[in-house]
Image (cartoon, rainbow, N blue to C red; front, top):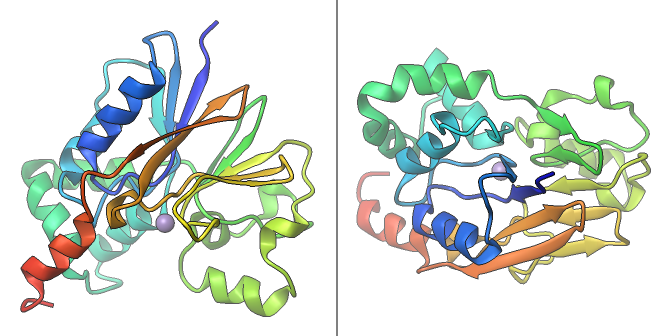
Length: 228
Ligand SMILES: [Mn+2]
């Protein structure tokens, strides 16, 4: 039986994705799941999205992050996309319409035998099937809603049967994998900002990280600063 490797916010960092799969020695028997935010801000959103979308292995899949969700909103004309979205759209080119369909159908969570996977947050004491989509995905004011509603960070209340694995925010605030009482595991370690790309093995909950090649987002901002 293969193991499962859950990967944090990739944001178009394709080289680091390859580095991470190599370092973790992921095999074709293993399951690979992206926890969302595959696209935007980094250099190769198309290649990263393609890896999860068109992978020949049925063991490779993803859940939805706020960046995938925001693409579907921009497509509908609900928001004006910032330049990093337009860059991803330009890279996807003829795949863009199909990519919107793929991204819009990504699940909001995955409940595995060993862990619950969501991109961003979990509201305390609310059953999984009644969680707000914007909370799980981390969009449309979910962070300030949780801050206003609760005295402590959401994860300090987490009390579900299985541990939870999230991305979206660098919970350690120092670009390191985050472990709160073996109940909450944070794997966004800011790769696109020059931090690390992190994955976590299940069922062992062992972290594997690789360093970013550079601060991709700073480079992007510098390049397009006159176009924002
Ligand atoms: Mn996110």
